[in-house]
Amino acid sequence: MKTEITIQGLAASLSPARSARKIIGFVPTMGNLHEGHLNLVREARKLCDVVVVSIFVNPIQFGPNEDFDSYPRTLEQDQRLLAEAGCDIVFAPSVEQMYGNKPRLTNITVGGITDDLCGLQRPGHFDGVAVVVTKLFNIVQPNYAFFGQKDYQQLAVIRQFVRDLNIPLEVIGVPIARAADGLALSSRNGYLSPENRAVAPKIYQSLKAAEQQLQAGAALPDALQNMKAALTEAGFAVDYVEARAPDLQKIEQFNQDIVLFAAAKLGATRLIDNLQVKYPAS
Ligand code: AMP
Image (cartoon, rainbow, N blue to C red; front, top):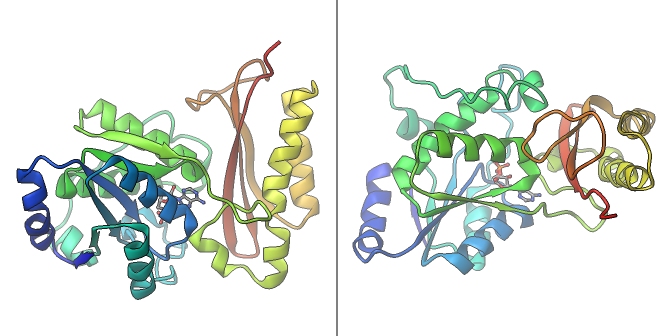
């Protein structure tokens, strides 16, 4: 496995694969890798001849009061895990390598689906994601790009601009990897105190409880209200609990497959999770 830190170096490393028309798979990450990321790499390994993983903590997707400075950076450990998972090339550029030192005057805003859920709490976040992912797509030029369903709204945003802008690659969504107690794996879980780590799985439990209530015939607003109450009771500061159609359109009742979403803070740590709920076949 090679690590490249410059765009030119990466281009040189990928050049033989491109000339040989090999299938290139790409997994963008911010590092501090866990099984969730490694699952994406394994999926890429199955489908592609060459697997590229980027590790880049992207400053423009963090708000002014968010954790850009303190975000965990663990490159050596990540390199070990990636080599084991079958990655061929790690791309770990600096902020200067990605953004240069001249001002950036181009933005990418995906409308509609970024207006609520995490878009409300994190203004500009999805623009920052869209810009960096587009830059990385242009740098790597993969055939397939792999993203986790953990960040469901992000995956929808990426699918949308790939379609809208005719970016020539296929986006693959990969299911959420969870700890044994149900907590969705996240680099931010490391911020949790032992006490809060013990409480954190309640976010998944509340999603599963809402699923059961809905499938037993509860009204959607009631199930959401119960989720919110359970999380508040457990000590979370709830950002939102919501239900959407799989394409993120608003819904009023549970009369089709839906996705339940929760975002809540435990102490200073913001956790997100979601659950796809099937409408019971009659
Ligand atoms: P991040 O490093 O947090 O930007 O995540 C990089 C990629 O890994 C994104 O596509 C995430 O959706 C995905 N990812 C992170 N955590 C998980 C998880 N628990 N399960 C599945 N995918 C994940």
